[in-house]
Length: 418
Image: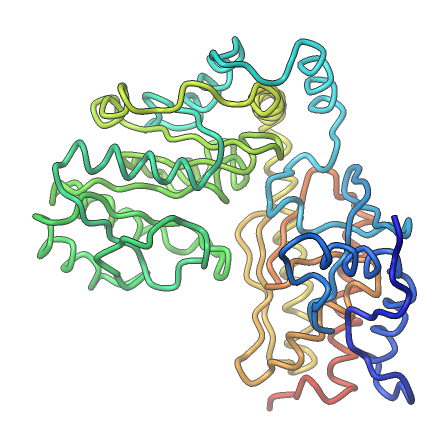
C-alpha cells in the first residue's frame, strides 16, 4: 500500500512550539506517522473524516490489543480506557474468551439455523436479574432497542415512547420518541400519569455515560412504581451498565425490577451482540417476530465472558469498583487542591471527566496531553476500567491525568477558581 508523505492530521503550523500542548501534539505527530498516513489512504476509499481530524481529536489506528493495552500502527503501546466503549470488562484478548473464539471458529462461524450455544448464553443473561424471565438474542444493542419497543407496543397497543432529557447521543434508536421527560425530577412522574393512555413504554439509562453516579436509587424506584401504577412499561437500557456495575448490572445495584431490559456491549465479549430480556407476558409479543440466528462467534465469546464474570463476581466487581472510586477520588482531590474547574464523576468502573462550559479549549486539549503520556481516552472524556488494569497501570493513569491538568493550567487553558 502506498502512503502520502505530506499530510498532517492535526493541521499543526510548525514553528515555535511555545505551549505544552503544542509540544505534546508535535511529538504525537511524529510518533503516530503510520496512523495519519493510514488516515490519508482511507480518505481515498472510505467515506469518513479520519483524514480531517482536528488537533483536539487526534485519531489512532490500532493494530493489536492485549489486556489493558492497545498498540497502534507505529508499535506504540497505550493504556486503554476506551475498551470498546466499555465492552471489554476483562480487557483485550482475554485468554478464556480467545480460546472460546478459536474453538468455535474451527467449527464454523455463520449458519442459517441457530447454533447450539444460544441457550447457554440466554440462561446466563436470564440469571442476571429477576426481571429477565425470557431472553431474545440479536445482533447489536441498537437492534435490541428496536425489538424492545416492538414488544412494548404490541403488548400495550400504544405507540408512543418516552425518553429522558440528556440521554447520550446515538445511544438509542429513539427518533420516534413522542414524550421527553426531565431526568431525575419527580415532574416526570406526573407527566407519565397524565399521558399514560398514549405511552407504551418509558426507556431510561439507569446510569448515564455523561453523568455517571449511583445517587439516583430513590428516584429510580419512584419511576418503577409510577410506571407500574400507570400501566406503562419500563425499559431499562443496560447496554452500558449490564454486567459492568455488577453481574446483575443496575438491576442488582439499585434493586430494580423493570418490565424489559436491553443489553449490549459486554454480553458479546466485545463482539457484536445484543439482547432483550423481560417479563414472560411482554416478551411473548416477540414469539413470531424475533431474530433466531445470531453469529455463533459472538455467542461463544459472550458465553465465555459471562461465565467468567459469574464465577469471579465475588472478587472481580468489588476490585473494579474500588479502582474506579479511587481514580475519581484522586482526580477530584487534585483538582480541588489546585482550584481547577474540572470534575470526574464515576459509577463503579465507569467515569466521565467534566469541564465547565467556559473551559472548551482545555477540554479539547486534555485528550492530546493524556495521550502523549501513554493513556487512551474517549474523545468525550468518558472512560472505563477493566479487570486487566493493574495497580501500576492505574498509577500511570493518575499521573497522566494530574500532569495534564497542570499543563492546561500552565498554558492558561484552565483557569483557577477562587
